[in-house]
Image 1 (cartoon, one colour):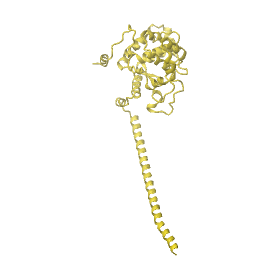
Image 2 (cartoon, rainbow, N blue to C red; image 1 turned 180 degrees about the horizontal axis):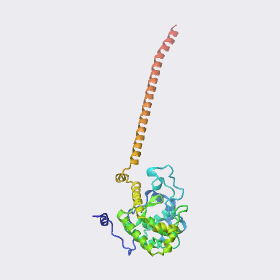
Image 3 (cartoon, one colour; image 1 turned 45 degrees about the horizontal axis):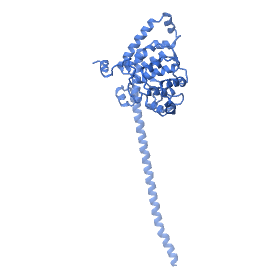
Image 4 (cartoon, rainbow, N blue to C red; image 1 turned 45 degrees about the vertical axis):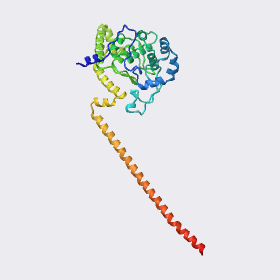
Length: 337
């Protein structure tokens, strides 16, 4: 049985778009968010006090319009990752936290409302702010079954509305490029999107490549020439989709996902051991052995010093005890005289 057939037997049936109730994919308690980000959201006063007062979908949409200025999970400069290594490294979102962004607080607030299909479509087609639309796409990416993602995103793959997801600005892109990134990458600034099963990821890549061919064929020649000359860099990066590069990216992100969410043992079995890794492991073993030897020597020295101190104290006591009777006898002799 092929991998795709095996997955199709295990996966739930594809949801009907005619039904207004949306299913929830994955962990319904966490919305598939990184545990550190979720803990910071639930502990923030903005979420617990201010957003708690918002009870309706339209109130939350208005709050997005006024408050969301970027799409990163942390506010700029609030996350201190200097000097952290390994599992506490900065890019994976598992080290020291910071001030969680209003965007992710509002994304989780939308989740607590359990949006309907009509409401999510309202987010995707909203005309007031690209950030309202972007949070709609992120809501889909975090909560919807992987088999449905392409159908949700396909109508927006060539959307030219601009949005800047980076905190502090300087990363302007289009909605279309943003949607493509959500389909083919796991990284989202300092956190990860939920993993897409490999059979579904391959189907998405095939559908995306077919869409690109049809889209390029339907464009006029002068438009394609403009892209080739670099006059529309965002459209060029969205149109020239490289499936080979995505395959390597996906493998890298799958490995990173295993490390970040506590599957280190599985990761170490799956990943081939490289020579550099073995050398680093040997060096770490040598360092640990050196440290143990130093600790043992230090403990031995301390024991020897303690023994010497005990002996010297016992000698002093014996000497004092010998001297005392002698002085007493002399004093008695004087009195008797």
